[in-house]
Image: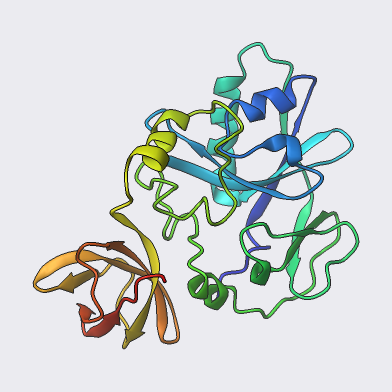
Length: 253
């Protein structure tokens, strides 16, 4: 079934006099822009590995944070661990997420990851049914998803394309995991990462991709004749296999 980015989401409210500084010191993106636009960001471990991704905006009381519902309790617990004596209150809300494509409704925000991901709106209204094949869009533009491609305590956000997806700001200053992320940005060339590949056939998610007898990566979300793959770029070719499926990689121009 196609993923539905408006379902199984929780909206957390973060308020208090220190809310902006609290978030700015923790997450990968510049939260001072929230409200003017929707912010996509991540919380990392101290070792620079991905833990959670989410969207941030403002309301009249503070910030609203849009996160996968199954991750919300652990995420809120981690935020409270960082809070210490800061004037910050973290609570749940009854707000819903509506998503769609086309004209952006009043009060909605463009999804910052890619224009084809449409818009997101937060309100108490029940979202209308949406038949968009979001997985096809994610695959076409190599947009990884928490719990599928994005794995807590394993994924590095630059390998996951967070710079391309407007999920990290290299000018905002320090945040948890910033040093590792900055070093990967400025001192190394990425040798691994997610890419959209052509696939002929199908393979279970997580199947190893084989190139010249060696493991070159793993296959993840598939849609039609394309899939998101995690690849070692030095082994990626246009003649690979994943189980019985044929995989082709074309390096970006």
